[in-house]
Each structure stands twice: as structure tokens, then as C-alpha cells.
Amino acid sequence: MNVVNPKTYISEQGCPINLVGKTGQAVQISIHPPSHYICANRERILPDWKQQTFLWVVIVLQQSRCQLVECTAEIEIEKERLREKFMRFGCDLAFNLRDRGYLADLIDPRTGYPLLSHPGAIPHNDTAVVKALLKYPVIKNKCCVLVHPMWGTAVYPSVLISEAPPFIIESIAKDIAPIHGWKEG
Image (cartoon, rainbow, N blue to C red; front, side):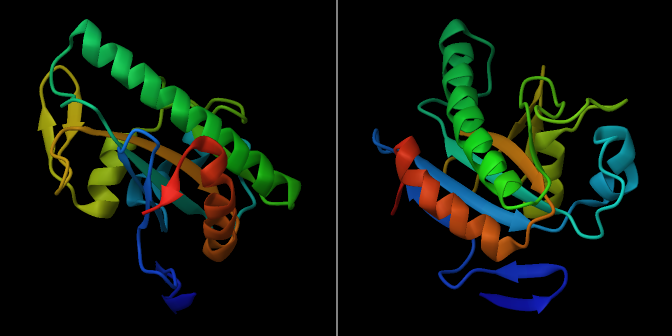
């Protein structure tokens, strides 16, 4: 682990953590300081979180089996499959962090509200945060769609927020990834 400054975290293997699912779809996990939007609206997004000095945003990008640009039944089924994969992984990660005494919560990609904390006055926007932190372009049609540099629009973003140090988040994420069918690739 290498901390360049309080705003940058680089894992020993490099960032992001690259994983591959059982069906060959890639998963990328990266850990970032919060975006300006999260800093400015923390109490409106996570009203229970008032005393935390440092927060980290864990971005989980899953490669989709199809481009997620249009609204079709097939695409909606794929989005739900990826949401469920994230929710299972995110709950395991959040509860592991909580068991170690760190506040952690995952944001439901469908609603934008935290799953384990009281919902705030405004929802979180995973796509906007990924755009802000990773600088990925966004296509705006009926909904905003990320454009991944390798996967195009076949990418499903999701976010977990925690006060745990990045090296602990990374270690636990790597430990539990195989339980969810994700291995380092």
C-alpha cells in the first residue's frame, strides 16, 4: 500500500482491483476520496453520518453482457442481475467493515439511497460520481449511461461508502470476491 497524499490511494497491485466473474465478465473495484458532490451533500445523502473525518468511495464497475444504452426487457433483466450481484457483494463488504468497527453503507443503484442507513433528503447518483472520480464520459438519453474505456456502454456502476482506511477495504474486498464468483484476473 502506498499513500501518496491523503487524496490518493494506490494499492500494491495498482488501481483498480481487476477481477473476472465465472462467465468471463470483468469487474473493477477502485477506492477514492469522495467527490465534491458527496462532500457538499453528505448529510443530505447520509444523514446518520456526521462525525466521520474521512470517507472513502468504493466504485464497483461490472461489465455487462450487453450495451446498456436502450430500455429493453433484455437490458432491464441484465441490469437487475448486475444490481443483485453488487448488492450481495456490497452487503458482505459493508457488514465485514462494520464488524471491524467502521461505518459502511452501499448505495442501491436503482434508488440512489443507502441500504443500511436512513435515507437522506436527496439520492446519490452513482453515474455522476463515477464520471467525477474516474473521468469517464456519459451518454445522456432516458438515463445517463457511462462509457467505459474498454467495455463501452456495457458497464454497470455501483458505489459503497465507508470510513475504513483503503487498505482495509481492499483487503476485505479481495478476501470476499471469490465467494461471489469473482477472481483476480
